[in-house]
Amino acid sequence: MPEVLRQYPKAQLVIVGDGELRKELEQSAKQLNISHNIHFLGYRDNAAALMSSFDIFVHPSRWEGFGLVFLEAMAASLPIIATNVSAIPEIVQNDETGLLVPVDDSQALSKAICTLLADRDLAKKMGEKGHQRLNQKFTTKAMVEQTSTVYKKLLSADA
Image: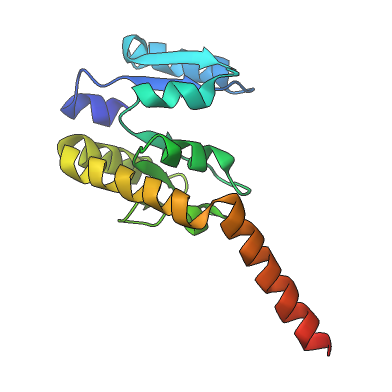
């Protein structure tokens, strides 16, 4: 965030959720003198509803299962910045619906954030493509069809 704030001093970071690192993160923000730009909201039942007020969804995980939160971001037409790990690349298409960065690469993460803050048209386009992808690939009907296809292949292999 310090690098992002050097280029975009009015940028705000909203952290939704809680965990064992919260106090450490709050302390780091104070030490870096950027706590006025960071908002720790803690756990929220309405996290998906909050997304409509964001410009970019950033989720730098070291590991991730399916990641329903990415679908929620796509439903809000947000461009996504995430790490290129686990199932994330199956959901977020790099350079299409968002930007994928290496794990623990804060420089790449801040560069990706600055890229989307600098190019609002690109950010909007990625958000729209993500919304389209959600409606095409991640509907209940699409998921049932994909699961059915897997079972049919497995059953035909046994025959």
